[in-house]
Image 1 (tube, rainbow, N blue to C red):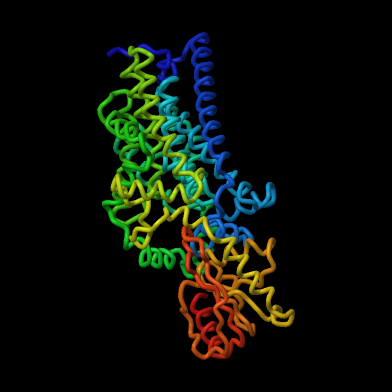
Image 2 (tube, rainbow, N blue to C red):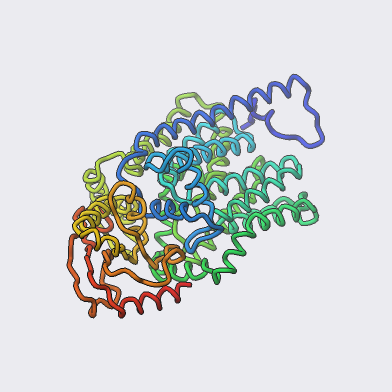
Length: 536
């Protein structure tokens, strides 16, 4: 089939100079296509606004908000970017649920927008941009990751910007794109370390699939590498100062979570996570390999496969690899546009509807639109009737009554309120000598956050980055202890009274007990001191 669409004018032809008339036509078309991608990004943003304030804070959001109150070049569980963004959001728009989720929602829209820009770069026109952008905008994977104040959406944005800049460089050979690439990868490393896998995959792909690009001989390439390292270096120095805390965190993560992940489930979720987008990215892989007009972008497939293989070897979480998908959506959309070029409009309409409508229906479940009880019934029905177990399977590999992501958003204010009730029941003298102690970072984050709403004592924890801010000695007479189990030597403490329990059946912390301990003695102080030194 001969392709005659005007979008062909967008392709860069080395060694040729377009006439002023053709250049103007191409420029105007490109602007219209860019505006179309922006419009679809806005649609996704509006969809997010409808539920941005629903349920409550996720326990990870509470942690990252606490990090933003202790700005540094690193933390035990994450590089510093998320804390910096948290501080910016807090200063500019406040720390409400909607405020903290606004910037992630904007970045999720940017992912949609740059998917459109990549589609245009690959030669796509109106239909291709519509397919690719709608596919990403209403994909379950990208709707979920952009709905919370967590690093994933910023990580995915850095991945797609990396792919976009590599494509720009391949098409133009302009060194400015290499410099921008170095800056984005450096920033990406301050978001999550996983971007290094995608960067290595792209480099391998370019070296072996674009032979005319003598990348390793280009001094600007090495300058961009140095630039990335310079941006990342303060965090590297922080890691050195703290005994490579990231490795310790990875060991803990591997022992408590990654070791239980199934490689089969990882692959299944890669297939299912984007919903109907499956018909785009799988076709995109095939089209890049088989179609001459996309073959020079084989590095996009190489990087995707490289990431998948490494993630399988390391037992990575499924969402770690989501950032590699958008360029494949773009390639698949370009193929469909060319293949259906002479087809009637209604055929294209069926494809768009088939891509969009199922994902729109899923979006009501993927994002917290429905009441929590209704959401639980929907997931239960999917488990019983469709044998879809992974939405209800938690990191402990057990089936629960609620999706883990939503369970992590329930119960934290109840916890803070009940803790405050117990605290207020103490005499003024007892309050001055009371702290909250926990080994759960979600609990620590909740007590930290809700101190502005309820009277609460100081939070002390030796879990994750909270150990960096914990006092070296435990000099408090009374302790409100909140945890899943009695994991510290309580037997010699003077008075232990169970004061309450979290009752919300859908909360991750359902059944968690709150204890009031009076007369904390030397035995606990010695235990605490030893644990504090071990954490340092």
